[in-house]
Structure formats: structure tokens, C-alpha cells
Image (tube, rainbow, N blue to C red; front, side, top):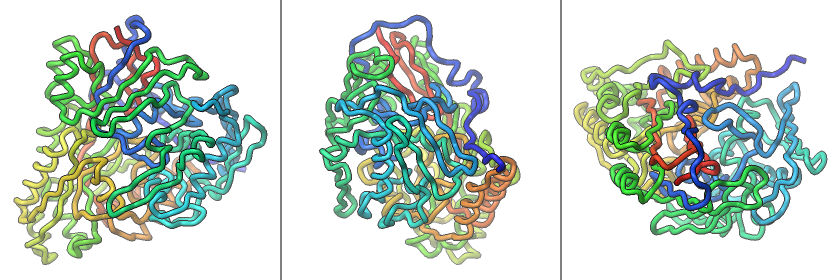
Length: 553
């Protein structure tokens, strides 16, 4: 039988370093180890939503989660290459529908229970059998990767990819799938698919998710008792300040964390994060303002720039305003935005205008898609043709956050708003906190007409980008293009590597020409900065930095 195409991973750091010179992997500071012990403080750009991996899909929640939990397959630090995680090795059947994992021995969860094959199967069965629309709606990664549940009650409506999991013996879980899917086995690196203690999940009502209006509440597990296998353990979370405190896991199966305590503090404003770094109240900050990079370097701070493995886009929701169902209106919006000017004025050096919804380093990128260069006259003409010359749109943008692809949400919103107003489109701005209503409003409730958001890739496969965005009907876009969904599913299921690449190239062309459910804006290289006492910090193109081997002093 022909061997199936395995999920493609980024082969080397050089493959995704763009125009920034040295890549993230080569920037690690290995100039001697710092002191062990003490407290390491990280200045984060947003608050976490909760600490149950499966109910999260954003980097600010994943930042602390990645320190406490681990996945079956991991990424080699500083790259997107696959390496052993909780599984020492794995194998995939010839038809791609069975994955066998060989687990590490003597791994324990933070509550002292064993990580064994039954625990792995418990996690997978828990996700598959999750009940309630509220809970399922928060399992965004699971819905995108596994497509459906035992009983679909939320917005995932597909036939489930997951078939079952059996414990061949204590150290060998075998995962069965109903069909080949290109995301596997790389999808088992996803932070959302981290392993939790079955005992803790049951003890602390992990599956209890309730919705009241726009708000979601979670069981005690997600809020105050997260229990993984990682090098740090949960200590406390101050919801008012957005401060997460973790402590070293002295029973960790691998190399123990170098510091005693890790504090992740939410600091909303870029300039405030930079000021606190300079004052010494934090040791590392995420996403410093690009205008501050040179100044920080001149003062002896280490500014490390990650490759731009991401995309920022303007989402268009076709549900609420019937005019947005007209392709000509969506094209007019695309022509109205001066993306070249936005990239030059609002984004860091090395940022690029996006022509489609993935970087050009991903197989399936199409070089000949329809482009929408800035053309105000054409935008006005298309609006007139569509009878939408007096269009009014509700434009959502987030506060209390900085994202790798979106360093200044308000500034980016303001630039796009001005361009749309110049085309005759009236804008009603709506701003909400990132994890305080924004993501739920735009991704789950679909309240907006327009919104700005983006994505940092998890692995180098086109399905992780366009398949995640447009592979099924979602409230974010308010469309039900079954032909597009089928094309994406077919591309994802293609086992021949060349045909897989070609299929995604065609899908990318169709997205930009026939559907245009959103407007790709840019790819932007994000930075991470630290003081000179910090040693061992290794930036990741996936913003997947781990702090267990970082020291200070």
C-alpha cells in the first residue's frame, strides 16, 4: 500500500526566517548560565481566559498553559520541527488512520497520578464526548482538527475524525481515526491538546461550562486547579491584575526548572511593558513596540525578533448586513484599504503585505492569486454597482492585548477606518477586551460586520491556516460555502504531497477570487525582549517560548 503523506513540518529555522537576517533559533543567548533559583517575571500582552488547554485558542492563555502542561509530540525549541514530547516515539499506519504512541516512563501529573495510556485515552475520549453547546463552542482547536463530536451541539457539525483510543498496554495508547487527515500527527503538538490529569478533571468539574448572555464560566479545574505534567505547577491567579504565579515542579520527569517561581503579569500598554523592563520590575516582555527595539538594544537589552509565521486579516461577517453577501462589496473593502501604507507606518521592519491567508513559506501558497492593490476609485465604483454607496458597518477591534501579528490594535483599526471612510463607508467602532468579550463576540456570537484578528501558525501545513479559518461554517464569517468547505476537506485529505500542495494552491486562488470571506492584511515579525541578566531564552517562531531552562542573575 502506498505510504500516506505525513503532515509537513518546517524543516529548518532558515526556511521561515524572512528578511530579518539571523533566525530565532540562532539568537538564543548561550553565553554562560545565570544563577539558578529566584523568581522570573514575564510581562505579558494579555490576560489568560482560563487554564484548561482544550477551552483555549489564544496565545495569552497558552503562555502559562505551556509551562504547566505538555503534549504527546513537541516542537524542538526555537523551531517548528517535531520532537518527542510525552511520547518518546510514534508511528502512523499506512492508511494514516491509526497512530501509535510509546509514552515516556515514570511521568506523573502534578497531583501524583501517572501519565499512562489510559490517561491519554481518557483525555481524547473526554474531548470527543464533551456535552453542551457552551463547552463545545469553546473547543475551537478541537472542532477545527477533529471536525465533530460524539453528539454535535455547538458550531462544529461535521462527521468526527476521532474514532477511538485504546490502551494496548500501560505505555502504548493507540489512536484511531475515521479518515486520513493531513493535520496528523503534527496536530498532537497543539497546546489545546495537552494532557490533563484525569483525576483532577473529574474532581474539579472540568466539563462544567455555562453561558449567560455573552459570558462563559468554567469549572474549578480551569480556574484554580489546572493539573498537567509540565516543569511548573499552578500556584495562583489574580484575576484583577491578570497575574499568574507558577512554581517549580520538583517531581518533574525531565530536567527541573532553573527558577523557583515564574510570574506572568499582564501589562496592557506596549510602552508600559518597555518601561517596566527598563526599571527592572520585569525580566522579559512580549511584543515591545517596534519603535523601541533600537533604543532597548542600545541600552543593553536583548531584543530577539521571531520570524513572521503569521497573518493579520480583516474579517467580514456576512450574517448581519445583507450587503456584505455581495462579493463586489467585499472586493470594494479590499481595494479601499491601503495595506502598503499600513505596513509601512503601523508594523515593524520586515513586515510584508499579505496577498493570501498564509505566509509564502507554507506549501500551498499560490503565487498567482488575485491581488487587491489600493484603488480608491475602484472601491467606490464597486460599492455603487452593488447599491451599497451608503454602507454603514460595525467594526470591532480589541483592547487589553498586543498580538504577534497585531502590535497596535487601535492604531491598525484607525488606519483601516480612515481608508474605509474615504471610500464612503460609515463606521461604528466597537472596542472590547480581548479575553473580556471580544473573541467571543466575533468568533462565537458573530455580532460584528468587520473585525481585525489573525493567526500564528502551529505547523507548516496550509490546512493549519486556511483550513482553520474557512474549513467549516463559523459565526466569525457568517458564510456557508459548502463548495469551499468540500475543496478544503479534499485538499486536506490528499495523501500525495505534490497533489496536496497543488490542491491548496487552487483553494487559495479561489478564496481570493471567488469567495473573499476576509481581507489578508500582513505578515509581521514579533519580538521578545529581556534584560541582560536573563540567560537561556530561546524565541520561537510559534511564540511557544518555554521558561524552564531560563535563568537570571
